[in-house]
Image 1: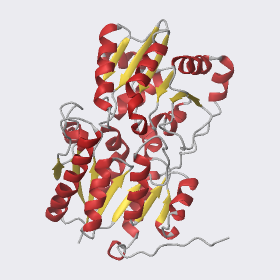
Image 2: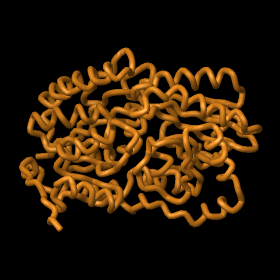
Image 3: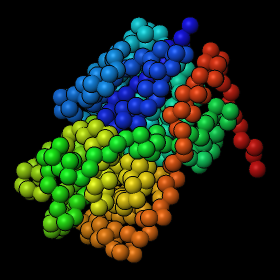
Image 4: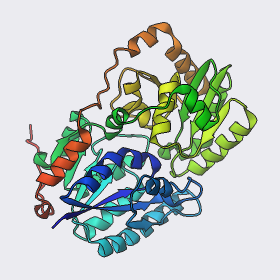
Length: 387
């Protein structure tokens, strides 16, 4: 009898990361894939990206619609509560043997909470990481404690999960799915990319993704305007924005970006690019600007600079291709100009991405196949030796 594996996805970026695992589960005769979509995938505002999943040839087994009318903290808390109830109903209907989640978003927390209460084992990908500027920090470590198998991207994160009391025999160092995906995708050439996206590359080109820093909610608008103020000083530069996630304050940033694009002919904004076009853009531009985890985890593989703004990714391990700056116009502008310098550009050729480990998705699938899932639920707290 096949093991039923329910995979949860709530955002376009998360789905892109999970894609090789989803494909591996679907193609493995040992498993029955159950795909549950939620969050941004089901929202008109964020592009109804569940359609992209269906276009990739996957059947969606469950839809959990939880996004509220706004992204205020109150509405997100309401969405989280609603999500727990709706995920419980889906799990009762689908009866999975294991639930697979990735990352730290509130949709994932809702799914993990429902699975925990219903006695379903959880496999968590990308646990143990740290993002000190976000409420996701607390959610991620909470999901770790609810989970039974852990697939981590770095040795440091493996140690952190063990520090949280998890059994070392259930923590697996596999690297980053995002980095592995880069090797799997045939990138679109620069001129073809211009045609597909209807954009025009100039002398300089930047890709920008700026998400709300949820522990600095009162500063969201100010920080976005500081980013614009820095970018406006760059002449003959094409600016390509990808829109933020549905975090608290995300819709305000979307509105600001849309207005900025209307007022500037060199600015383009996209709700959803898909992984192939997104990676192709990274390959085509001079640098990536913003505060997305992708700038730290995936961009170094392209030998490109990342201008990492503010505290959203504070605490996350980074390559030397990442230039940190304050969410202030002069600091942002100085960081961009530093990335253009010949001396810095020379260093990029020798960058080693710490998140790169061969065979990430294959190692996850092989572990799920070899680990006895029916013995996962009971676990002991692993105490570290007291020095």
